[in-house]
Length: 173
Image 1 (cartoon, rainbow, N blue to C red):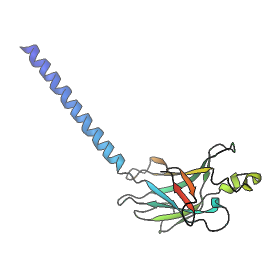
Image 2 (cartoon, helix red, strand yellow; image 1 turned 60 degrees about the horizontal axis):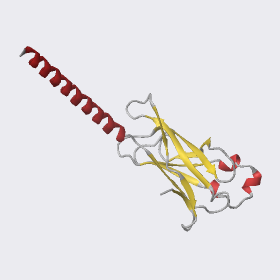
Image 3 (tube, rainbow, N blue to C red; image 1 turned 60 degrees about the vertical axis):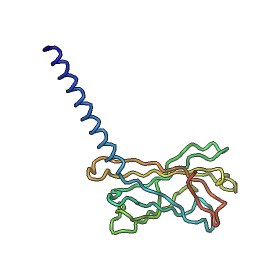
Image 4 (tube, one colour; image 1 turned 120 degrees about the vertical axis):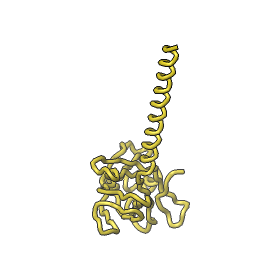
């Protein structure tokens, strides 16, 4: 009888431990899914190279800021060129708020990517290079409420969509 009671208590403790672990995992997953994630879009290609377009990063999260935001541009690959994926720091970053290092909820910033300096001059003369290119953005920012932990988020891949008028960089479906 005592062995049966000890076995039942052990099963009860195991069951309670599993429940506590599942609750902690659920709360952790819920907190992680609430983190702010930047979204990106491009302005239209007006003149010059489509690589010279101004892009927009936006914090669509209603609660948390993107603190100490650093945006990087990645030329993922240019088909048939042999260029490896390369990360470049975004230039001409303009925040729309009073803070100069991050985005409050609902705010946006504009930036440009220095892709043309990466690509050699002979390739720049190729008008089809942009149609063979894919880009994405890498954001680094502080974890909300903790601050000492940096998060890195890679965006979806973008390509130059010439079916839109005027053409612009859009994310791949």
